[in-house]
Length: 275
Image (cartoon, rainbow, N blue to C red):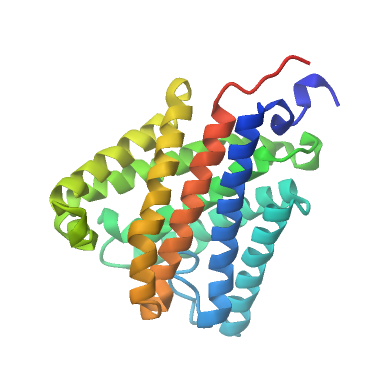
């Protein structure tokens, strides 16, 4: 292997390596947990498949099959069991589900022009990008993957950034709805709604601009992790079953997104050491 094709991880500084390991673990646990939800609820969480085609037989088999794939992918990424290959192809699978499941479902519905109706599609698109970021983070020969897939991996940054920016915009478009999700103890709910919206837009745009990507990713990852603990987890404990465990899905999604931001921070900073 030439120096030019050596894996990114081998060139990371020690602090960035630790940040990368934490971020990848968060992503793997979040993704694997979404997979396990398929078994617990015997149904698709909205983020993976919004509506199963009625013409396709053996629905429960497909539920378990997709759950098993995502749970196994989470384990492989967490413990680096062919992690690079598994993460890259998991990204392909998730992106395919966006176009095969979410897009047709939205186009058939009455809310095709409503940004909020595309929330789960955007989340799955971002998770696909996260899988590609995880693939980039592993030690491995670039020849492990087809050339076209190898070239697609850096797009993970933009899939994630686009979701963050659009979710930030939703805070302004649907401010009253978002404010109602903020606990009263946090203080002025409309202030936090607009502040979080601005932070998401800044974070999403920032991670797509390489000179500021590391700082934007670090701040975004920290913010999302705080939301996991203070917002999503209490809501999931209070309402664990409604809508195929939607609140628990939000916990795992936010944990995965936090991990993606930390992975991106590690990969975006100064990483090259003298050989």
